[in-house]
Image (cartoon, rainbow, N blue to C red; front, top):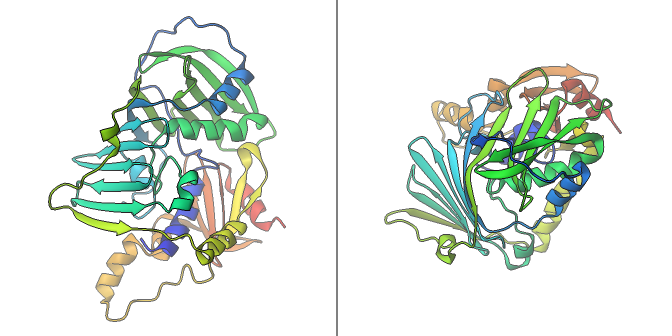
Length: 369
C-alpha cells in the first residue's frame, strides 16, 4: 500500500482501537485450577511486569477478534493479524524472533534475525526482505508492519500507561498454558471517560511475563479481542530458527530503508504533528495528515472499472465511504469509525482523533487548543 494511504488508514482504524497498544487483548485458552501462590502486592506485581527482562521462549497463541470491525479484507494495516487463527512465536530474548501466523489454509512467516526482517506469505509464495539500517538496529521493535510478535510487550506497555489512572488489584490465581499465574485486574477510576471496563492480565508467577491479557468493554460480558498462550516453554532457542531461506520459486522483493537527514527530518515533522489530549484511559491522540492525503487522482490510462475496484481495496476515501459514518460538529465534518474498544474520527481536512473513548471525547479533543 502507498505510504500515504497506509498512514491515513492506520490513523483512522489502527489508533481507533485504543491508545498505546490497547488493541491487544487476551483471555485464557487453556486454564486450570487456581494454584496456591505466595501473596503479592498489586503495585509490586505491576512494577515487576513493566521491568521484567524477556526470556527466550517458544509459545503458541490463539486469537479471536470480536472488535466489530467491518469486513475490509487487507485494506487496513494490521487487521489481517487480528483475524489470524493462531500463531507460533519464538524469541531468543535478545531481539531475534520468528512468528508463524495461520489464517485458514495460508501461513505468513516473519523472521527477525537482528539485522534483517523476512516476511513470507504462502498465499502467493512471495517474500519481502527488509534490511534494517545500521543506525536503527538499537531501536528495532519487537514487531514489523503491525504484526504481533510478543503479546507480553503490549501488556507491559498498557500497564505502564494506565497504572496511575487505575484501581489495581490482584484477583486470585490461575493456571494458563500449564503455568501458575497471578490474576491482575486494572479498572479505570471514576473520573476516566472510556469505553473500557477493565484490563485483566495473567502474570507468570516465575518470569513475570504476561501469559494472557484481556480487555473488556462496557456493556459486554466477553472480551472484545482474545490472544492467549495455549502453550509456552521458557528455554534457549536454536540459532537456526532465526535464519530464513526463501522457498524454491518464491518471488523476493528487497527493501533497504535509508535513514538520511531528509528522511529523519520528515519523520520528525510528522511526529511533531501528533498531540495527546488527556491522560490515562481517556487519552486521545490527535494529529493532521498531509493536505492532499485523501485526494488520490485517477492514474493516467487506468479504466474507470479498474479504478473502482482498486478504490474499494485501497483508496482511503472510498474505504471510508464504505465503513465509516459521516459526522459533523463545531470542529468540522468527517468520518467516524467505531469498535467495541475505541473510536476514531478523520475530518475532511485531514485532522484525526482516536482513543478508547466515546465519540464526544474525540470531538472535544479536536476542538482543544
